[in-house]
Image (cartoon, rainbow, N blue to C red):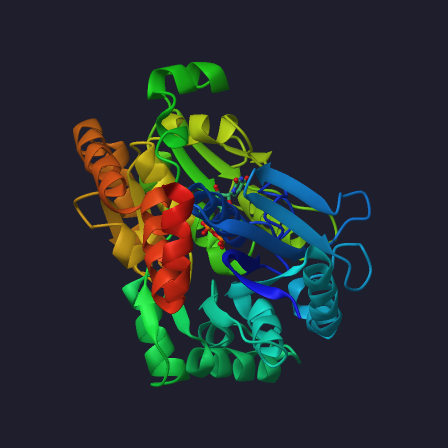
Length: 422
Ligand code: UDP
């Protein structure tokens, strides 16, 4: 039997590869969260292995991010992209591969932090095979999602069952906002231990460039009124509400208006279909002259877009947290967001941005216009937005709180970490 290592922890993200370039098909907040949390925990002394399903035969099996943090891609099912609703059938194979990897490594992980319900299932099945603590972050709740979709997928019953079981059985659940915790309690179960630990963002990356420089780099003029959306193409992100809002006469009255809808998509996949639908709508509404789709934004270009914008809009119908909001805020750009989920926690109305009812293009247009037509208000909100993120939402702060949580669950690990940092 291998000896249990108190320092080695596993993060599981079956469908969200933490080593992949963000902005690609189905890659979004979960990939960013797992990668950033993993790296920040490693900086605090943990040895972090992040397990994901290998979704591309060309990808290497192991990617080292830092001396203590790596992504490990396990072969479970075909080495091609599989939409998340079709992955469950491969989770058992995923666990077997993970156990093989652990046996070869010669230690036992003492704690697993699972992400999304597919990984929750793997974590619970793992617990049946060995003694291991499980911490879970949902990223999305089936109980909320299925209220807003027209067709409920076949997998829904399984997902809801797993989401309930993990809440009741895991050592700890991490809710990323008080609103997400409320949903867990009201829609899933009154049992189980929940801590609220928000998501974070990179304070340096998202303040690396000022608005003037960013506009020069991207080819925008100083007089342009720039409205930015960043995120996945998914109906529940509410991009339709945003384009309808921009087509309102109130906003169209602004000269030099520019609407940027950024995010990756692939032809034939669900996000490609949504992108085509939005593009058609933009044409029908007659705003194609002011709308651009720059595709997925990576590296230094993403901070430049946030900095260049007058306002960043997060028009989601539901959002457990919403990383894009705090990235814009870290860049000193005010956010107009739907009054849903975690956006009510990150965006303080009239202080760091504005909140409007979801699916309401008129309210959204009025809120955007109030910022575009008042540069002083824009700057005031942007300044306070940056201050709020500095105080509450750095990845270091998130990792510090997760470190305390893990250490509570694994009292012995505290000693090991103290020795490691001595
Ligand atoms: N993102 C990116 N490039 C893009 C589009 C999105 O890097 O072109 C990133 C974005 O910066 C954020 C994440 O994808 O970190 C989206 O996270 P969020 O929580 O807002 O939404 P989710 O994808 O979890 O629904």
